[in-house]
Structure formats: structure tokens, C-alpha cells
Length: 490
Image (cartoon, rainbow, N blue to C red):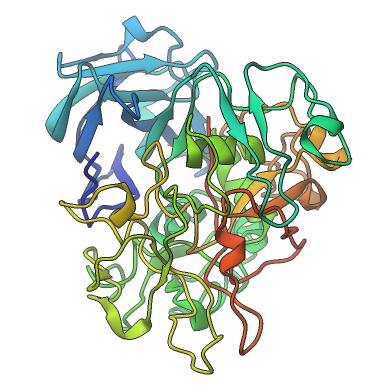
């Protein structure tokens, strides 16, 4: 697999009373139109460095495409259901569209084995909006890059060496696992997501641009809950904390506790949403509640920690104290070697196996960057798994950058998780406005932070042990942390 060194996490095309096409380095969705008589939405999609293969890792990449619509009467954005029949959606023979049973989106991917860029290709999706009045709607078509994690005959969790690790255990099906077998305080019931059956994982961590697009479809009250600054703060106010490379700002202030704000990226101060405004830097300073709200809105779900280990390791036998790229090679990035800061091609000027963004102040110097970098920053058009620091199935930054929330099998709150999917809508109740409303999803007490991150709480410390695939030593705070980001599965 070859992963290019630059891309954009999400592409959006808006159509209705107005039309906007957002250019992207990887996924591009442009030219959106709606047939109001048939409820079909058509757009062009393209992305770089796609693959489908029957040899290891025997998987493919895909784009999770979903649609939001806004009624011009109430200005509220809602999630558009799509037909659950793949035959109702059309595209060229190069691509295949897989509908999903809940109709919350579709997966678009290569139809046959191959690799390389997907040129601009027309896609038509059949919407299924109840009592639709398409003439009075605005639409946003969104795409998130994913990797397929196929079913295999068996895979392992645990390596016997990382802190609080599972006991090395081979998973051969979806049945329950006893606490004695995996060494936790609770068993993993049969309904707990183990990743044995095929599923999809986000290829990258949520980017700052993705989070901006999320905020810009929320109500005023929901925005207030999903950011730090009040939505009615002055233009150019940081929505989170700019000390950790977070460039999200208020572009147009909200008002009257009713009119929502408009957010944008402004990593390099000046005009909003320039090409160097950090759109592709991983979103940070989130809480677990922020992450689950985003995943519910995108009709994804939190991954379990067993799924996390499969995404990283695939069907390979565990290597003692290995990282997501399958070896113990590890090289910390330094701020001085980060190139093209904030730009779409932000990268690193040193190629080495196992290059990662993690906290390392152990050498009495603060050379590490101490903040997130662009998603996929280590990959080039010539890198393999080790030099790209990629997980087995092609997901990036599964070790390092920002922390990965994963539902824990060892706690009572986590072990009851059954993998219910988000429905694209958030709570509108006053006390929980803007929260995920999937009742089966645990709170932070049922979650661990897997894969480590850039943050270390003090000088002379090194948090590289947290990057190990099997490390289960970090519990999730209830509050926002500069080290926390988001990634989902489906």
C-alpha cells in the first residue's frame, strides 16, 4: 500500500439556494446537484492513492459518504437518510457503492483490484427523506476516508508485555471471552464488539477542518456545548486553545443565544481558511463527549479496544511491546524538522521506521513539538508500512499524535457496549443539547485511551510506552484534554 503525503480528511459540497465546492488534496466532492422530482443527489468524487487487493493486507480503502440537509424555513441541519438498497445508487464501473442497512450513508470504493488515484467520477445517491420538500433544502455531501478491516480466521490481542495488557489471546469468533482468558476484571460478552466480522475504521484521526464542518451544522446551544469559547464571542476568537496548534476560530459570531456562529480555520492569522490554516492538523482538545458527539453526527461509532488491536496488528502474531507499525522501532519527531507547517503538505524531513509524534522530554530538552501534526504526516508516495508508521490495514497515527478513545472490556460500563451505530442526529434536550444520544454508548468511565499521544504532563518524562498496541494503562478523563482527538468505526 502506498499512502500519499498530503490529503484532506473531509470534502464537502453544498447545494441548494447556494452552491460551494470545497477542493481537497485527497477526497474531492464537487458539482453537486439535486433532482427534486426523484430525490436523487449527484456529485463528482475523486481521491488519491486508492487500493483494493486480495494479498496482504487483503483489504481496500473507501469513502464513507453521507448527506446533511437544511430546511430553509427553520435553518436547522438534519441527517438525510439514503436508500438501503445498493441498486438505487449509481456510479461508473470503476467504483462500487455499498448501501448500509440503516440508510445513514454509503461506502464508495474500488470495484476491482488495483491501486492509484481515482479520477473525478459521477455518483448518484437516492435519498429517502420523509415528507421531503427538496426545493426548499440546502444540502451538504460529506466524505470521510476509511479502511476496510476484513474478517480473518483469527487474530490476537495482548502481547504479554505492555502495561495492563490483555493476556495474549487468540480470537476466533464473536463469542464471549472470560475474564480469566484475557485478564480483565470483567468478561467481554458475545455482544461486545470484537472486530472479528468485517468493519471499517477511519483512516485518519478527525481533522480540524472536519470538526469545523461539524460545528457549522449545529445550533447555537449545541455549539456552546461542543467548544470552549461561547459562540457569540468576537470574530477571530479561538474556539479551543491555540497553544496546542488548534487554529479553529469564530469566523462570524453567533447572537441572541439562538443564531449559531460560523467557524473557520485560521492557524496562520489573517484570512480564514487559507491553504496554510491547519485544516489537516488532527483535532485536539476534545473530551470523550465531544468525540462521541462527532461520531454520532457522522453516523459512526466508538471503536472497542479489541477492535483497536485488530486494526493495528491485523492477523499477525503479537510482537512484544510493538507499536502500530508492527515493530519496536521508534523515532520521536522534533519541531524543527516539521516542514510546511499548517499547509496541506505538512510533513517531516527525516525518513525513519517508526517515526511518531509523542511526548519525550527525557533528554532535558523540549525538542518534541508538543502538539498534534497533520494526519498522515509520515507518509510519502514512496513509503511502506514501517516508514509511513502505518497500522496493518492502512490506518494512520494509531500510535501517537492524539489519543484514541476505545471502549474498554475491563469495566462494567464498557463491557455492556454492543456497538450501536450513530444515527446522524444529536440530543436536543436542554440538559444534554449537542451530546450523543446513543444510550448504549458508555461514558468516559467505560473508555481507555489507546495508542498514546503527543502530550506529556511534565519535564523529564517520556510517554512512549503509551504508544504500544497492547498498552491499556491510560484511563480517559471526563474533561477536555489537549491530547484527545477522535476516530470512529462502522
